[in-house]
Structures are given as C-alpha cells and as structure tokens.
Image (cartoon, rainbow, N blue to C red; front, side, top):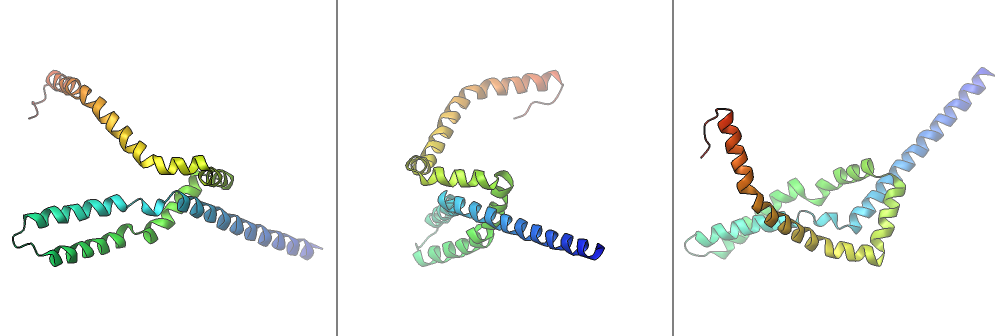
Amino acid sequence: MLRFTQLCTAVLLSASASLAMADAASHAADAERFLKLAHADKLTVPVYGQVQQMFAQRFAEAPNGKKAVLESYQAKANAALDKAVGWDKLKPDMVKLYTSNFNEQELKDLIAFYESPLGQKVLQKMPTLTAQSAQITQSKLETAVPEVNKLLADMSSELGLPKQP
C-alpha cells in the first residue's frame, strides 16, 4: 500500500509540474502576443535613428562627401546595435518583464483591449501623446529651474560649500 501511495504522489507531482510548465508557456505566449500588438519590437527604432543622425552630422563635417563611406559606417553601427538591442536580444527579457508584472488573465485582458478599435487608437496616438506630454512638462519645468537653482545655491551657502560655476 505504501508503494501505491508513493506512486500516486509521484504521478500527481509529475502532472502538476507539467501543468505548471504549460501555464508558464501559455503565460509567455500571451506576453509575446501582447508585445507584438504593442509593437515592442519597434522600441529601439529611435535609437537607430539617433545613431544614424550622429553619423550623418559627422559626415557633413568631412571633406569630400563620400556617401559610400557614410553608408558603410551606418551599416556597421546598425550591426553593432542589432547585437546589443536587436529584438531577438530584447524579446526574452521583455517577455520575462511582462510575465512578472502581469498575470495571464491580465495579459489576455490587455490583448483584448489592444485588439479593440480604442486599443488600436491608443497604440497609434501614444507616441505623439507621450512626446507632447514631455514637451508640456519640459516647458512647465523651465519656469521652476531658476528657483530650484537659487534654493540649491542658498543651501550650499548655508552649509559652507563652495559655489558651483
């Protein structure tokens, strides 16, 4: 009888482990689906653009505009970026990030939302809204900078610290 109990326990543990692995795989698949809907694979596009712009600006300073040289170095820079932040490098960490912050049902709910017309509109508008929000915040912040700098100088003076240039 003891052997039968041990066998049943082993079968139950094995089945539980299989279910847990299936749940983890399903959870990861939902995270991947959400990331695809959210166009997470495009997150680094601005980085590539900035690097391309840096090369183009530097190239503009060079004598004898040799376009092939610029293109060659831009391609090398893209390859370096692909090695570091290509989607194949980021995806496993992004899946882990989303599966650790959202349970499977929450990911399913996010997917359902982003597949809806409103969710699609949010995805379309979000980059512009984020940029405009940053501009608004920056313009409002600029009005506080002089006061914050004065407070920092006053505190430094009260603490007997040397003035900063």
